[in-house]
Amino acid sequence: MTLRLEKIVPANVEAGIGLRIRPEQEGNVEPVAHSLAEAYAWGDTAWPRLIVDGERVVGFLMAFLDIQWNPAKDPEDRRSGLWRLNIAADAQGRGYGRYAVAQVAEEIRRRGGDRLYTTWEPGEDGPREFYLKLGFRLTGETSGGQTVGVLDLDG
Image 1 (cartoon, rainbow, N blue to C red):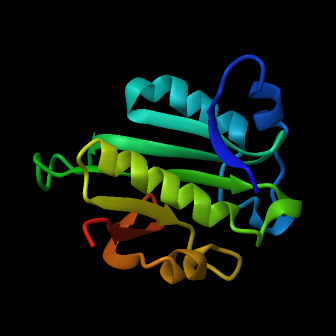
Image 2 (tube, one colour):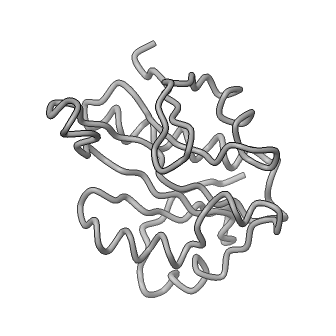
């Protein structure tokens, strides 16, 4: 594997938009085109990247970096984490998701953070076990009906 993340540019945007996950997972994560629209709207807070193995796009990730989580509860609560993760249907189970999480963790560390947050849809076809196996722990929170997990990066 020669894995790398690539910034989304005109030359590769169609490959990202064309990425397809398994049909049973479609209710768990937005399509890449939706994520790119959100990335545009969120500006510097969003960090979208393609996951590339050799010359093939195998996935898409989008991180959120240093957002104010819940100003009504705690105006000082700023968080960074994994917002979206789409791995191509025929590329799942090969370590690309673990690679994506590791790259987001590295970017958060580089920016001085020590925790990586993510959310996921609860349910049978959701990614709960994937995240728990990577060391995420449940926070007891929900966001938009999704479960919130956190991975400590300082250890």
